[in-house]
Amino acid sequence: MTTRTTWRTSAARLAAEVAPAGSRWREPIASTPRHLFVPRWWDTPPGVDYGQWELHDGPSDEDGWFSAAYRDQTLITRVARGHADHAAVGERTSGRPTSSGTLPSLVVRMLRHGEIHKGARVLDVGTGSGYSAALLARTLGDSQVTSIDVDPYLVEAAAARLDAVGLRPEVVACDATGPLPGQYDRIVSMVAVRPIPPSWLAALRPGGRLVTVIAGTSLIVKATKTADGAAAGHVARDWAMFMPARSGTDYPPALRGLFDLARDQDGEQVTRGRYPVVDAGGSWELRSMLEIMTSGGIEHHYEESQDGRRTAWLAHADGSWARAGAYGSEPPEVHQAGPRRLWDLLDDIREHWLLNGALPLYGARVFVWPDGAVGLSRGGWRQVIR
Image (cartoon, rainbow, N blue to C red; front, side, top):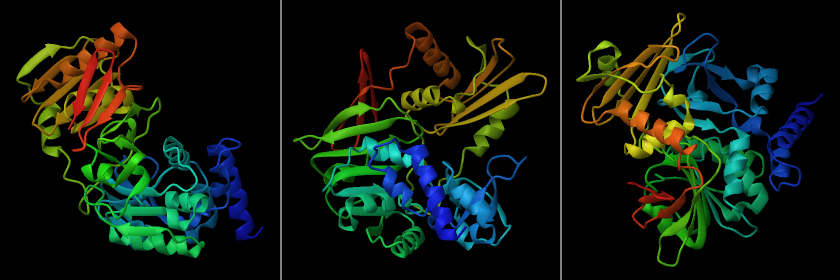
């Protein structure tokens, strides 16, 4: 079987998996060679903690390359400042992912939330591998699509790979949180932001629609620009998580010092928690609510020992930290310090969930002011993201 036949067969199978029958996105996926957009990627080796990465080189292992590229999965292409294209075969590295080829089903979901129509001028925020720009250009035509990324190398590489498959949308290196290169009917972001950059509303035409994820949460915000320059909409009854938009070559350092302090130090306050230990970082709805209620910036760590002891740590950029530990479903001993009591707030959120059967996030009404602040409301619940 030839390489051409192989990728077309694989792409058609992927298209059938991630795009419903009749979807306008099925044909573009089936006709786009995703493997060419991700020739190299980083992956966590078996038995190694997340945050440690090993390079995979597609051309030297074509079967593995096609298996990865045409599976519905995210492929990490950049870790910290190191792009996979520039690494040696077999090289290992560590750090936080800073760019990727997003899993195709999520790309499709974000584009569908955008309600993109024929003739729409679309801004694709977060070029990454260039795959989402390829799907847009195949659907709308090159002249209708602009894709931006903060990393000049990513833009250069994506433009070259798009050109190699006959696609030439505009691809621009710029900071997504600053001025944007044009006016658009749709802005669809493959990176997370908090709050909405004011430049997005300035670049969005009246009646235009923006779709993005709030950084640190799984909340997909969909809002339409109104005549007064603001935007209104709602939080999708759906969820996604993206890397946060960055302005530099890497993200700021993690709160490692606070976690070291929280690991075994006594807290300023020691209490008994109301509910069992939970991995809030792995529970998207709890994590999202905690982020919204604390102005963001919480980092999570969770461990479960072989003897059944569960321990969770929370750390906030304001210096607050919490540690909760217990066996199984027992109420935990909770140590907390800093300007706010993070575990108490988490227990309050869990109590709301138990009393009401749900948290108010998904389906909440959204209002975006011209300065980018986001208002959320549902029933009697109100919160503003700045």
